[in-house]
Length: 309
Image (tube, rainbow, N blue to C red; front, side, top):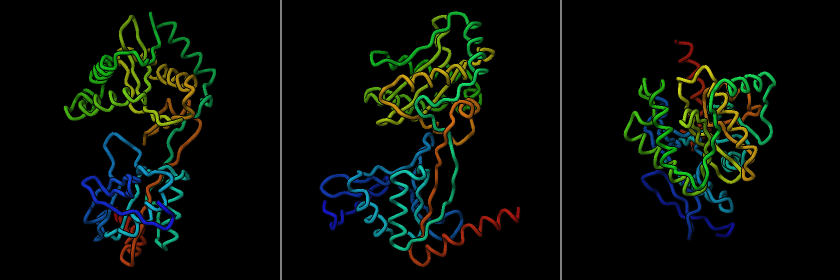
């Protein structure tokens, strides 16, 4: 694909595909007839209920052409890019392309979440002493890591059993509480394991699993996914011990440089140990006169709604 060429755009059930002779970009969108109650249709980044990252899949060497083709082909006055890391390559490029075309962009939402860099965890002396005390009191404690030769089916079963026995099981939010969620969990964890893109750690007591954690990897990056522990061991702070095991695993893995906490809520263990933050933004672009008007009006509409309440 040359700099002057423009790749054709293909629509699909899951969004928009940008391709030349190869697939260069995948932009999963949902089309909404009224955006936030405003009488303007929009393409909105599709987000799975168990993921908090919506960066489209774009081949680096064709990224600008893909975005230009996407923007030039839009049939809705609004387009939203949800949950993309601020200041990183896709975020910078989408802003460049939109601004170059005179398209107004607003930051629709912004928040920061924990980011753990290799050898950067802030483990205080108090935390170390508390962990050491819990380790001494918890008889037959063993830290375990998922190894390539391990039985991933057994690890999955252990995770689901522990989670279902806790508060998530009681309120119906455990992965095993829904047949669809359990199937999704089993398939995505097993697939990541087969691809070598899964790391896992846990705690055993007396040979029985009492805590498990799974994270996904992508190059030098990793993304915390799911964690659970047996509430019967709450007096021994298994969540904190599991977080400590995760820090050690990240530091010891030569492939990895950082881990995204992959959460919207403040988690105490993460706040204590993870000193860095990763800003996530949702961008809204108004295309054409109606789109610019809609994008400009939305902050005022939010302000009015807050005043009415």
